[in-house]
Amino acid sequence: MTIAATAPKRGKLAAISAAGSSPGVPRPRTAYIGIGLIALGLMVLAPALLTPFELRQMGRFICYAMVAVGIGLAWGRGGMLTLGQGVFFGIGAYCMAMHMALEDAALRGEEAPQFMGTFGVDLPWFWEPFHSPLMTILLILLLPALLAFALGFSVFKRRVKGAYFAILNQAMVFAFVTLLVGQQATLNGSNGLSGFQSFFGFAINDPANRQMIYMIAAGLLIVMMLVAYWLMRSRFGELLVATRDAEERVRFLGYDPAIIKTITFVVAAVMASVAGAMFVPLVGIISPAELGVVPSIAFVIGVAIGGRATLFGPVLGAIAVAWAESTLAENFPSGWSYFQGLLLILVIALLPGGIASVGRYFRWKRAGSRFRKEAEA
Image 1 (cartoon, rainbow, N blue to C red):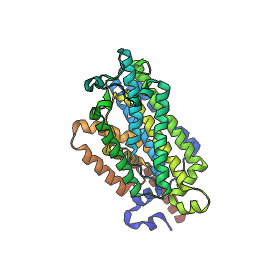
Image 2: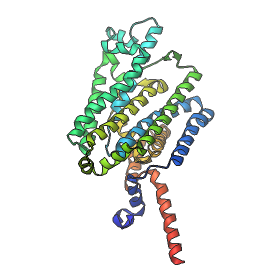
Image 3: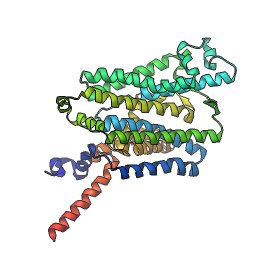
Image 4: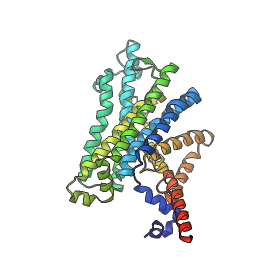
């Protein structure tokens, strides 16, 4: 039975694209060439061709792409619709922001950030670990991992999935943002943390240092893509796809689907946290507005448009959507949301596998044409 025959009402393009929800992992040559081209574009061409402002914007897009790599693993390969990545992004961002704020305070000879003086409070106990750069890096990695493990294991062990998992993620984002907004005296509430002067001892306004921070972010994205590709090709990656498609069969074979899902959820959370940590020195501010329900959904939209189950689709989709938002929002500030919604509807209706599945459609066309010529001969 052909693909088109199984879904005649959706149209040929949509049927072929939908089949791409479980595409094969790219061959090593294809994967490494693709990753190499992305590295060339981000780490060589972009610094050479873009203005400092445009390079700063590209750094922001790269942070979103890091989050997208994790969502691609969790949602595209594992079937877990993670609508709460804003929480993990925020944990990494606030950890980095608190360390940078303490660094700036030390340069001024003060004990605490300036906004705390407005409220007349001393440095809270939970700020103390962020005096240490090493402890800050460890917390950026460990805090989201521990939270994701506790949440994921308890949820997946009870076999919660689908829409219920997505709703739970959204509730977690809402609670996290509400908590941040309420911490006016200790985290500056809805204003967030901003105005940073240094990044691990380097002056953040120095153009050479800004370019160094951008290169670190681009390098981390490349490393994350390599990790994602390694996971896709590994035995664990095969179990993850099997868990998504036939969880009961995986359990029958002696594997624990809850463990497989939890590990993937933790990996995605750590990637989002690292992205948040790099977002702060690149953009210069973090506030609850960057972490709420809408930004968390926007992360997923970029992945859906690019192609959630592929290696390159989430990265390219996240960068393209962020670039389109940045460009269109300047000229049509009230129209971007409508355009974004329309784009998502078109992709769901015509390309369920995302833009990355367009190549599959043309390969199918070429194969069909060759088959017809052979039959006519």
